[in-house]
Length: 305
Image (cartoon, rainbow, N blue to C red; front, side, top):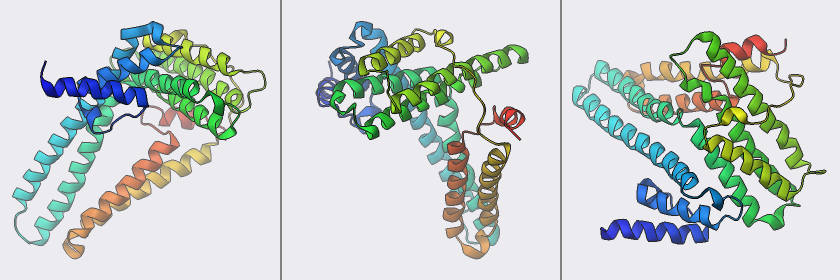
């Protein structure tokens, strides 16, 4: 076995023992496989799932890293081409350079987002596993409101990606896709209704919560996400105007980024920096609002007036 690969495996096991995931070494598949294998074995609640669970966890991170590496390579090549084509100091060249940097930035963001966006089930499994391990290792903090809130936020992250599962289904009939969207929303609602019980655990015990999260995690890991418990529909609290305001804010920032990029001949290269910054703000607002292209129309149509 190559020395470096053996080092990654040993380092992964040690980091799992210390519950410290190295962000740099996590770019290597061998490290992730060793880390999650050890993490699963150390979990009293889920070690019965063994290699299938650890393979799912490592596979999700490895796929995300693969997409990120490809996007960086694409970005570097695109930037080289842009600067080779604009290797002269004229207003037209500066404008083209600014737009080239802006388009490259979008490419680097969109490529991994599209690939990782197909890993919704794997991401849900990973976040549920992390929540279970957090509850096991820090069980003494169960009485802390801040700790329970952090667990509820993890559950909300899982609910969001469960809602996004249908985004990976493109070549099916619209009526079938709508049924899947409704089913995913119902399963996500079931998880969201658990959040209130986590923050205010009247009758919910730590053991009960671990068991419920474990059951949900294995349903998803075993490709049976449709067997997750459905939530009971409640009155919507999100208004149509709030959705409109959030979408409008994001569009304004994205539009400003394009406008600033056109000022490159007057401002110079600083226009590219400002345009990228404004674009980032717009995308962050869009992401934090939960407005995705596949759900924007549906959300506007079903929100309260």
